[in-house]
Image: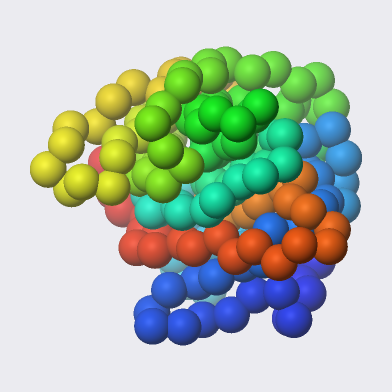
Length: 180
């Protein structure tokens, strides 16, 4: 959504997206949001009973610079699970926006902006998890939310609050959607 072809690339089987200054949270100008239907064509299904997972790696640098997963209906109705840089520290944050009403559900200090993120959807119940890149580490809770906004739900990848002039690439690996 709102693609900028000069600011994303595929290399070595990974998606790289340039950190962008736009916003989806409290703004509707984020670019290069990748949205995926769960299924294809007429066989497409909703996201109920599905989980989405991704590895996200970025350096941060600006306050609130972030990247991660979306459960998306539109720019004013979504849930986001993100790796976020705030005042020199790393956090995993679960937040939602329902018709322009914004709410941070959880904010957890973590050792690094490099992590695995997972959103699970069961009806209007959303469960978020995170873990370090070490595949042998268990998933840790990252919060829960209730999300009952109406509309077509899709999973996606995004970033916001990146620098305008500096070039920093966010790396997304192993994005997948699976049945719970």
